[in-house]
Image (cartoon, rainbow, N blue to C red):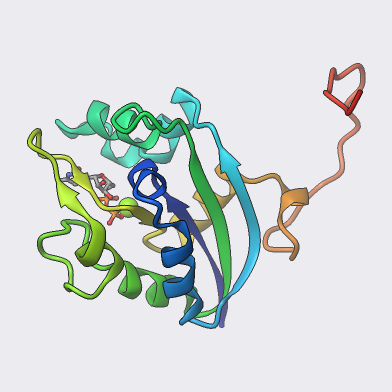
Length: 167
Ligand code: CDP
Ligand code: MG
């Protein structure tokens, strides 16, 4: 059955110029990219994204990591891949969370490292299961930024909302 998965190219991946390489590796899956954007990650978004790890001793470090504070690159590339077994395929290509334990030819095994302070800089994020994928995709994207209908939507009328348009 078709599934969606959120992929983030984390700030270390961008700093190491791995974007093209990672997208090429992911294209091996034959999945379809249905959304993509560059994001300057607000603290609230990073904390919400990693909320299941809030009690961990490394929580504040991974928030800094995702926001680019460890790499002087205040951005991540967020993508949604869609297709059969998307989560399993992408997690396999990504490799284990700990880059030293990851399959050497996987993305994390090839390009990840453990910092001296113990953070796993592992280059990409991949949603862990379908429920997490849905939660994460809804955090990182609006319905109109995704080119397929993944989840139910509703129409709301927003009045007097200030928006930026081209001058
Ligand atoms: O990203 P993944 O789903 O494989 O792992 P996670 O358990 O959801 O952890 C999120 C992120 O926290 C990891 O990708 C690592 O960057 C970081 N982490 C860490 O630095 N040290 C750990 N012991 C566990 C996770
Ligand atoms: Mg995870």
